[in-house]
Image: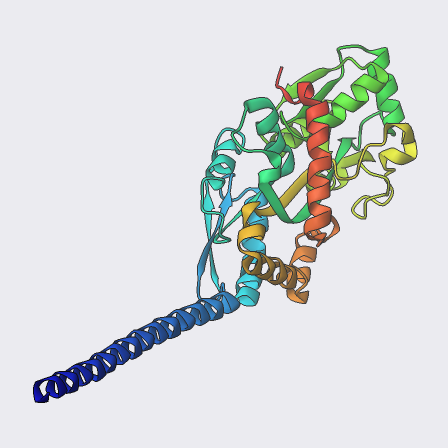
Length: 353
């Protein structure tokens, strides 16, 4: 009997002891889980705080598919001091020129789509490389922050030219097939404008291609060509020597208020004012979906930089205010697709013959 009591007592002690150990293990496991959850919560909180202050203190890269000193490059470097101020970060410009901007444009799409890199280029080349050169990107891979500059294409002659209107010039071309010479750069908006006019009026002229706008304007002043497909802002460099006959769009351009727009003269052609040198800022399309807070920060800080009164004075001093505007992502992407459709439609005119 005593042995049985002792055995029962021992069993009870062991049970209590086991229960105590089990409770301790459960308590220890619970404490570990609590610590892990707390650590994860702190990590998540830190990540959220980091995202809320992004891109402050970061270094972001802007890819420019042109050489340093070109129009797009200068546009970037002009706004950067103001954008760095509103974003609280540092921007580094990386020029990756080559193959009519295809080198830099393709390279940009290989970078992480996390908002740490931004693209600045020109629309016609962006579309032209996809349509004509088989670039590995699609036009919709570029999600525009803003199409900042729309410098509409012009038809321009010297002030000593016998042509005083676009009608005069077109009539002269029709009456002298293959004799009147035009200067332009291949693959740009000027080629599309010529394509539209040629198809509408059955024109035959001699085309001479140049490497840059400065080159064909120099040729015009030297009397080597009869007219150019220039741009409203670019033609300002000709000063009083220029006679702009028509400007793309449905409204007169502030730079050349006495020059009719194409819609005034040939409304049936419906030549858009966005047909020109359209310089833009863009992100990869995945940024908005995967990093919405970063996307919004970049759009907001860019807008604040653009609207900075000091930057507006800077644009005015350089003669760029008349062709610059904050259009926002929605309107900019709409214009991007509109111009892409024109490139597709007139792609044969973009090829250098």
